[in-house]
Amino acid sequence: MNPKKLAAEKAVEFVQSGMILGLGTGTTAYWAIERIGEMIRNSDLKIRAIATSKRSADQAAALGIPLVSFGEIDQIDLTIDGADEADGKLNLIKGGGGALLREKIVATNSRQMVVVVDGHKLVNCLGKFPLPVEVIPFGWEKVFENLGAMGCEPLLRKNSDSEREVFLTDNGNYIIDCSFGEIADPATLEDKINAITGVADNGLFVGIASKLVVGYESGEVKVLERILK
Ligand code: 5RP
Image (cartoon, rainbow, N blue to C red; front, side, top):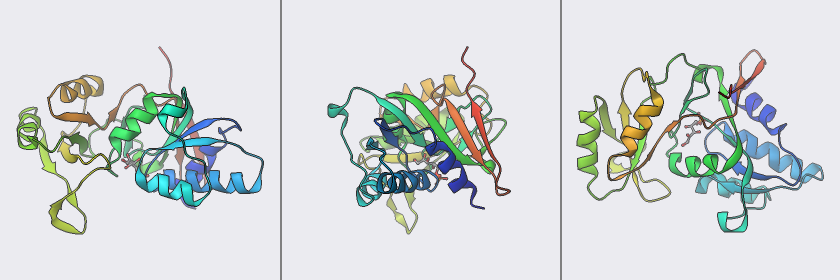
């Protein structure tokens, strides 16, 4: 069984008619968008949505999901998005697909963020996956140096099909992937990185996700809730 599809379809069970949805990006969020499109076609579900990337917006538009902009709504009710790593406190590393900035804007303006992952993404400690940092192209070399001085191994992301072309986000920015190893204090690291001038944001999502839906190849699906202090 496809664990990503299982997790995504379970998360879509939290969708209710009338909601404004945030649509995530990536191969797991893809299945949630497909399922929402199917429900609009086959039931009386009425929702409107904001997409976190051009890719997801194109997919949603092709499925007939009505898209809105922030200027047309007050708040997003529910966002469903993937992650590259998630820990037991529901802190995340995101941005493997390069959409972290829009994803964080959408998630932090949502009443609820439901994260969908396959079992391999669940970790005890974040950091095995290199942390994506979105940076403004002007002066990126200095941000790169600053990130290196914070104790990581930084790498400027290139397009997968051309080692010479720098990867550009939907916002026209660069991504620096930072291998820190185990991240003991994600909240402090998130703030420290964002304090560097030239950083747009980084892929640490701390205290944002409300539910984590984990799919397994066996067909099992677990729903973890964030414990509020
Ligand atoms: C994109 C993301 C994705 O949610 C993350 O990379 C997970 O992707 P996938 O579901 O394809 O494994 O953060 O910026």
